[in-house]
Image (cartoon, rainbow, N blue to C red):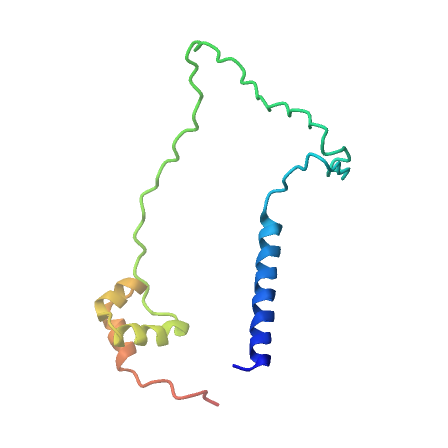
Length: 140
C-alpha cells in the first residue's frame, strides 16, 4: 500500500464515521442540558420549559335506555300476489333477425328441441331453418 491508498482509506473511514454519528444524532432524543438555557419556541408558540396543559378527554354521553313499552305492531304492506305464468302459444316462425343465432345455437351445443323450446316454435321450424341454404348476400 502506498501513501495515497492509506490516505483514501483514512478519509473514507472518517466520512463513514461522521455520517454514522450524524445519523445517530438525528434520531437520538434531545438530552436537556442543565447549564444551557435554550429558548426555542414550540409549535404552539410557548416556551419548551412551560408544561402543556393536560387535554380533556372526550366523553360521549349515551341517552338512557327506556324501559320497553307496549308492543306496537308496525303495519306491513301486503305481499304482492304472484301471478301464474301463462305459457305463450308457440309462434309459427322465428324472426328473420334470429335465424343466424338459431343456426349457431344448434350447431354449437344445443339440440334442435332445446332451440325450439327457447324460441317457442316447433322442431319442424328449427329443422327447416337448419336445412335451408345459408343466406349468401343481398338480393337485388
